[in-house]
Figure 1 (cartoon, rainbow, N blue to C red):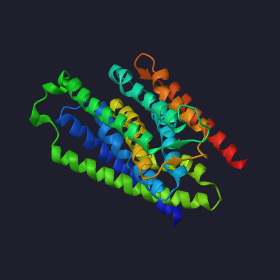
Figure 2 (tube, one colour; figure 1 turned 45 degrees about the vertical axis):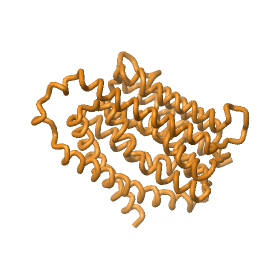
Figure 3 (cartoon, rainbow, N blue to C red; figure 1 turned 90 degrees about the vertical axis):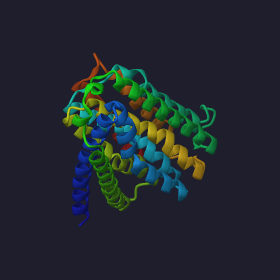
Figure 4 (cartoon, rainbow, N blue to C red; figure 1 turned 90 degrees about the horizontal axis):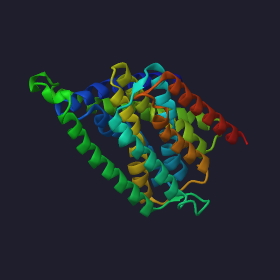
Amino acid sequence: MTYIVLILTLVGIVIGADLLVSGSVGIARRFRISDFVIGAVIVGVGTSMPELTVSFIGALQGNAEVAIGNVVGSNIFNVLGILGITTMLFPLAVSKESMKFEIPFCIGISILLTMLVFNFFLVQDPVLSRIDGLILISVFVAFMYISLKRGRQQIEIGELSEKEPALLPNVWISVLKTIGGLGLLILSCDYFVDTAVGLARRFGVNNGFISITLIACGTSLPELAASITAAIKKNADLSLGNIVGSNIFNAGLILGISSQVTPLTSPEITIVDYIIMIFAALMPMVLCRKGKISRVGGLFMFLCFVAYNIYLLKTQML
């Protein structure tokens, strides 16, 4: 029965991703917002709802390892795992606009989170205080404001501004698709994570390991489905925007909100995990050649993700 639930939830995730992507693209076209921004704002934030739920509940229950490990692990999986797999299948074009703002912003907030957790490397015991959380929330709000403003400016001078309103998608159909797809994604993801974690706990692994691997990857399944679906539909901006937006949302708003419930201490999530998260955030910038991340770049990212998980397994067994 457990495996049937896993299969059904995976089917739900795929269907939900298809609805979410098609609905989001329709909204972007109708309101003349760039695909990258709609990916970062609507799809990226929307697909991160499972992470928000898991981390917030973890904070309420006093389980900081789940709250922080879920975000750090998701941000690593989003880039090295999801972007790696997506790029291996479909080489992704990277726009100059995203290279100038959104990707550097993602790198910056990853570094900021690490510095706040370790008090600018003055302490060894990691903790994210309420003040640290407010800083992260403020940074996220600034990102949202600038992104929406930039998105509309970019689209006003692009080809979409020349389309007749009658040729644009019906806004209500697009909104219903987006909401329905997002709801199906979150529901399916919730059942998948519960089932997978239940199986893992039978083998006696600790909360830190579960949160940074199974929970993190499980709550990132919507990003995986949405990114691959967008890539199949030849929408590289939406695919990459989804990953970048999710990571910024995770680090900025999710941990910002969770730390307001209680200061987050997570000794089981080490400095190595944070360094790998920063390394992952750097990869789109480093591997982009001539405006594109190649299949070789995607393979490199995925192999890095495999190596990181081997490291986690070895430390778990020690």
